[in-house]
Amino acid sequence: MRSVVFCAAVLILSGCATVSMVSGEAMVETGLDANQTALRTASDEFCDKLEDNGWVTASTGLAGLASILMNGSKAAAVETGDYLNQFEDETHSPDTLVVQLAQDAEQVRIGLIAVTGEAQTVLANTDTQTQRGDVTSFERALVRAQRARRTFASARDLLAERTDALDPADIAIARLDAEIDAARHAADDLAARYASLGGSAV
Image (cartoon, rainbow, N blue to C red; front, side):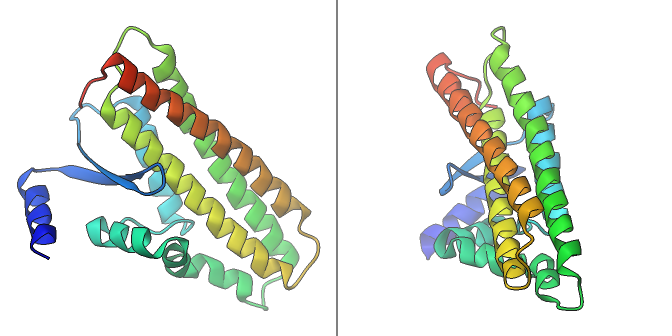
């Protein structure tokens, strides 16, 4: 218990900092650079959009991250309940909900494409060092995309109880899966470049 309190005190005294989940389960603390790179800005905006739409759980600091790490996707599913509730509401047309689910998954895919594009720009730029903040911000966006995908899968399962006409949703989720795979490869490349070239700590 004392170690938890000490860590919290260190975070408060160290000024502005963020904590993100990296590679699914690791937590990495990183200071915020006053001059945000394009990749970090795009990643932050992407994560904000996913949270604002209820596709992933809004960030709740260390306590929220600890809950997700301990309880896994079950905790995330509970906290995205407002979004999922509409797929259980029998007053809503299942056909309309299938279309909405497909559109939501496509929005996440398009947003992730943009963030991955910024990561590819960083990888292509051999004149500057890769920054740790770029790596962690992009990995945070990837984790959020994976969690949104789990939310959509839960919504799809709810709809499957009411209709068999799920093709639009299934196609959109599959397309999102492909983009998540592409982002994962880019994240691996970015982390490898940072490690091998001695990237900047900011």
